Amino acid sequence: MKNSPVIFNFFEGQKVTEVTDSVLNFAEEAVPVQNAKVNRKVRYSIWKHSRYASYNHQLQARAKRYFPLIEPIMELYGIPEDMKYIPLLESGLQPHVRSPRGAAGVWQFMPATARQYGLKVNRRTDERLNTRKATIAACKYLKELYAQFNSWTLAAAAFNGGSPRIAKAINHKNKGNYFYMRLNRETGSYVYSLVAMKEMMDKQAESGGELTTAGLLPAEVLTIN
Image 1 (tube, rainbow, N blue to C red):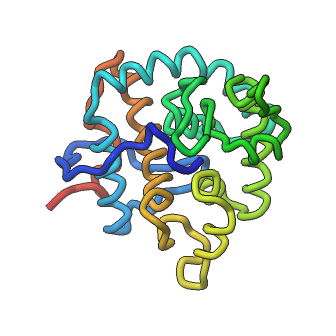
Image 2: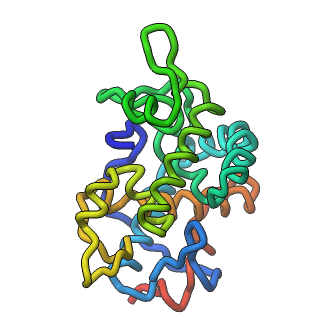
């Protein structure tokens, strides 16, 4: 959702220079890293999210705790597993996080959206803070967004920026491909951040907790001249 307190600031960065995988996908959709601009943004996002080793170790620990709760619910609703990185990015998987603008819970639902998808939000009860119930609501929301856009990357972008903004940005030139759309800074970097989070967390788990940028992306595509 908008204005998450955990979405990182941008910095000028180092380069990813050694990689091994041959294909990069998110939520069963290809990331067009053969495009120079997309290529650059993917590399930058990976660097940005791999800068804070201590924080990333905290994320890994929370993922081990909360992903086993989130993943079966997503599978039940037919949501691609990669979408579990949304709450990781939104809240750092901290159930009681609240943003200055009123979003709350691991999925950072605003009150009106939470109520729309069946959560109780009042002075006595705030079910946005219940990770299981909030995940069910998020799955319903994501399924609705996918039905509207027929794309999981666009559904993820709309989760952040709202469906009207995404619908308005679609035109004959970008053909509804998120990676070629002109969006505001936060929404325009949102899926890149999810891609980076996925790659970073997967590689960190494979390396036994040691975070590196090596082996993250296709060497033939991400070679830096």
